[in-house]
Length: 466
Ligand SMILES: Cc1cc2nc3c(=O)[nH]c(=O)nc-3n(C[C@H](O)[C@H](O)[C@H](O)COP(=O)(O)OP(=O)(O)OC[C@H]3O[C@@H](n4cnc5c(N)ncnc54)[C@H](O)[C@@H]3O)c2cc1C
Image (cartoon, rainbow, N blue to C red; front, top):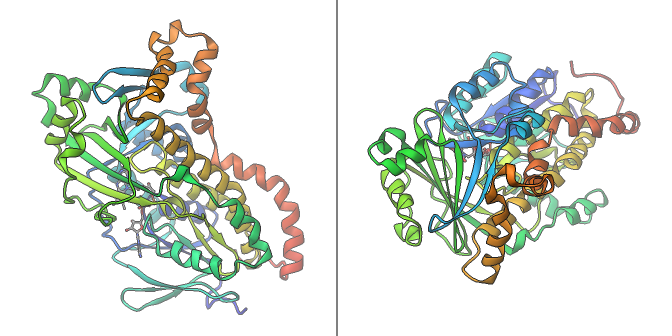
């Protein structure tokens, strides 16, 4: 294979949203050449908000100025209240100071555009080549050749590694899946094909909508203005439908609605355009009046549909492809972890490839990335779906039993034994406590010895990159 027509290793990132910008920045910090291609305008105005749980804060706060940005523009979440659709409270989970101090990071609700515009500035200042209004229309790959993309203007851009951070309707994922299909018999990937299979609890599609409501629109309604002052994450569970609500920064209250469904309309808002039509109001007929009034006050709605594939593939070494963020997995959007796993992916991929010293090592490092990330993202996907199913149980004995079990949390932290507290927190703590950088470092402890051997047998071992 002849090297590409440039001296340094080039990473092409398709998609300049959360996952793409995080990986671009971290790769650039490792002095790699990075070009980011995105079909959208550079200036983002989504008027929507994302959750920044502690596992995401931990990584973001390693970036210059980010801790101050989150503090200034985010809303610090101080707990979660879970209700039935009627507003009957079934569980409460305060984020205790002591627990948050142990985690070392806070949980924020953050306006998407403020975060993304800041990441863009960091990337630009660090020397990432950013190209907007540049849609990738095809991906060209073949084993033994450098991956390339063709843009909507017919320009061909070739690199050493192609990173698909192009969201839930990913073109790169499509190509990667096709490649894996083509070499199903390839020994090196047989194992991954098995481990990447997942039942996803029988759910094939997650339909969601996010409503943005100006805080000023709530001020004349005493009940809603009380919600708007709260820093709690509110969850309402009706049969097969979940609604959440939280304040997000200085101006917004965000309401999200989720349901799993086998049928639905086409994915009408994959680009997060602020004028998507609102879903049918019948969806909320079973919910308490506050929800209906919140929805009525919304000025912007984003609708999303995520389709869960039968088999998960996130890397393909022979053609040098990798997907990250929503392009790689189906973590429920509008829930807790869709953006956090995208950020973890970005940081982890950047950290794995900070060890690259020769092009021949790319397939080896891709395998390492998959080893570090696949289990984590699939566990999170399953736990988010599992939580959704439990919270949206229909009326009946299973729901009654759930309410009884959750009920112990209502006495408040002082009335709970340490064991009860640990039980309430267990799943959340495991997710929140994860450090993607540490996970890569742990993998590298052993992997570095094997990489030396890999480089010697697969290439000349020259440090020809920097
Ligand atoms: C503008 C925008 C606003 C959002 N706002 C919110 C929000 O408020 N709340 C929330 O929960 N989630 C929001 N999301 C989704 C959220 O960012 C993701 O669910 C999650 O953070 C994972 O991010 P990601 O980077 O993997 O994917 P995404 O955020 O979906 O980013 C994918 C990027 O790839 C680009 N892209 C896709 N196809 C191509 C192509 N062929 N060529 C070039 N570029 C391409 C898209 O323009 C987009 O910028 C938003 C996404 C976008 C794009």
